[in-house]
Image (cartoon, rainbow, N blue to C red):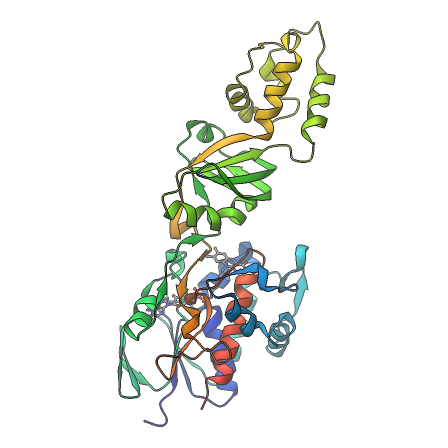
Length: 407
Ligand SMILES: Cc1cc2nc3c(=O)[nH]c(=O)nc-3n(C[C@H](O)[C@H](O)[C@H](O)COP(=O)(O)OP(=O)(O)OC[C@H]3O[C@@H](n4cnc5c(N)ncnc54)[C@H](O)[C@@H]3O)c2cc1C
């Protein structure tokens, strides 16, 4: 029994880096993956370029019920530690906007292939198409039932991720295994996810993208705002600004709160500047229809919505008065969109919630409740902002579990 390998469930970001780190430290490692390929989420990340980390790691870019855990995990494990690891496997990084880091090849495939090569080089045994279906602990031995038979180990790392993106292997199974071994699950919700609306106008605007500002309200109370792309779709709204505030929307919606967005379609012009721009554009003798006149500043598909929400009565340019302009400006800068739901885990990049981190040692990632059991990555109650932060948490917790998880 002494030569039993450490078993890692999940060949995603955290499982792969843990496997390499652990095998380099002399531990035998068996890495089990339910998909037919390893690293599926890495492969699609950052639109195929893999936003692998962020140069500016700060704990306020992460969310958890236990922020002290994140602080402790990141001590001595900042961006430089991750960069050093990737240099050691032959992957160079390059910096994009806002501290976002990418592989120099700008190909997510390079990340997976170099991780796989290194894992095999240091002796990690990778078994794909192997779904773990149950885990029990007999004395100090973990007994795993899998689609490829029973496996046993003394050290088990749950790196099975979250329920986000089930089409890529996202699964709640790790939560169930951890619960069976005594752990508590903090409720989980989709995050970095698109939002749905039943407002009919939004469908008519599908495909329109504007650089705007979105403010989220729940039960009429202001919650948060984000600037960036707003993309109208046939189900509701997406775009970077929406993904960035989706965590708050998702949590509120799960409490049956009523959520609404107020959209500023021209955030770079203040209300006063937009008002004077519009007033300055009115030609007194012009019979130009109002809708056409508005196309001078707005996407055509958005024009009927603005007119409808503003309740502007003027039909032509020459009929426009100061009151109408005020109404139009209000509607352009505070366009209302009711939010009914998120696109769920299928549309989500990550999940909030997960295993309660107060039950896990932040230095070794070992369970405080079940000896020999370790955790890494998104299975834990930590999620990050968009920008490489989620991978940072996965790499760092994987390295900690791999390094200190050995005998
Ligand atoms: C579309 C998309 C784009 C993203 N882009 C970025 C980005 O650019 N930057 C960033 O920082 N983050 C990004 N993320 C988030 C990032 O991918 C995750 O936070 C990260 O992959 C989490 O790593 P993990 O190891 O915890 O889990 P995962 O990478 O999800 O790995 C878990 C693995 O466990 C396997 N597994 C689960 N249950 C079982 C079981 N019972 N038996 C066997 N195997 C099992 C799964 O198949 C999976 O391969 C993106 C996510 C998505 C969905």
